[in-house]
Image (cartoon, rainbow, N blue to C red):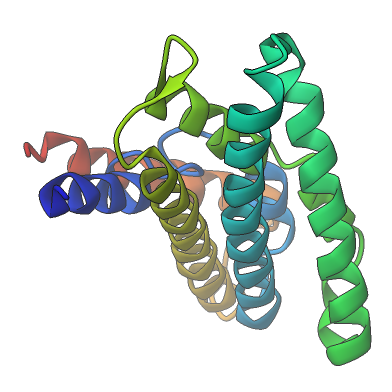
Length: 202
């Protein structure tokens, strides 16, 4: 087992190829839920859960259902169905266990279903860890690790953004930049900062 390769996957998913700040996926919840830290933390945790379990199930679906029956072209539809099921599970659990967080996140919970970051990680797993529709060595563990670490990277970006926006609420921002404009400026600066990680060589 090549632990160095797994470390590379983890660091790449969290920092170098962060789904929000370098791949620019999942920007809707990134801007919408990052006004305060608690909803951002809840959204990040929900995305980690959905990404990891979606990576787990979609790998099984692709290897043991789509490939044997020659249905690889249906992977996007199949993956969206898997993601939708888990998002509904997260939404029901959150409504039951943490009603305050459920109300704070509002419409953004169902939006995880259409969150391109979640779908992106499942498609990326297939593209990276399957060669000619055959899984490469340790592809299952690698897929789970990438999905989990992509969720960690998503949460990291959310928490960084929410911390900055909470501080911005206490500063004197020009009226023309208040709200969404300053959020986009901050997001672009964070993205440029994270592009510095692309210089890492493994």
